[in-house]
Image (cartoon, rainbow, N blue to C red; front, side):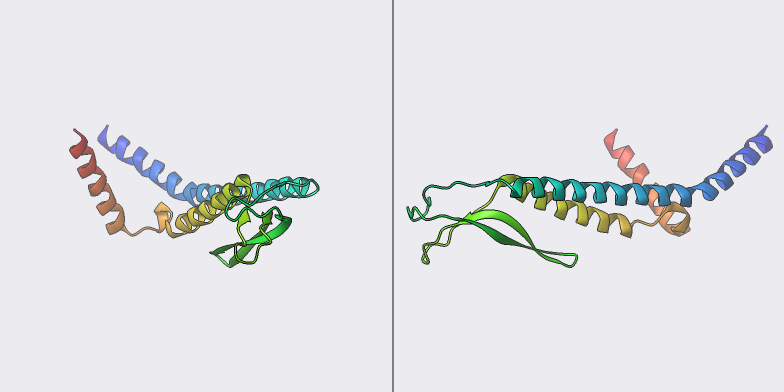
Length: 152
């Protein structure tokens, strides 16, 4: 019975080692496709919105000026080769003020993009199980056991 179980677990391990690279490859492709769809959706939403006037600011909150025209503004991103992002906003024309007004949805989209790029960078650093060293796998298993024992 023990030999049978050892042989069976050996076969399972061989099958697992054989299919694991494919699973990782599909997971990375899915993450890439999701990011691509997200960027495409943001672009179409922004294109649809640009045809309309997003802002109508009657008075600057900082200086009280009534001249706050719509303008394309650049927001610095400085992440993975992206220097800045241009969005539609408004800027006070008073030279001593120059207060900028953004749409909160645009700012949230930029935050989401930064988060997604950082997450993808982190995922690239994680090696698939079949590429990890034996010592690393054993130390990870020990750490997981210690962590489970602390919870009890």
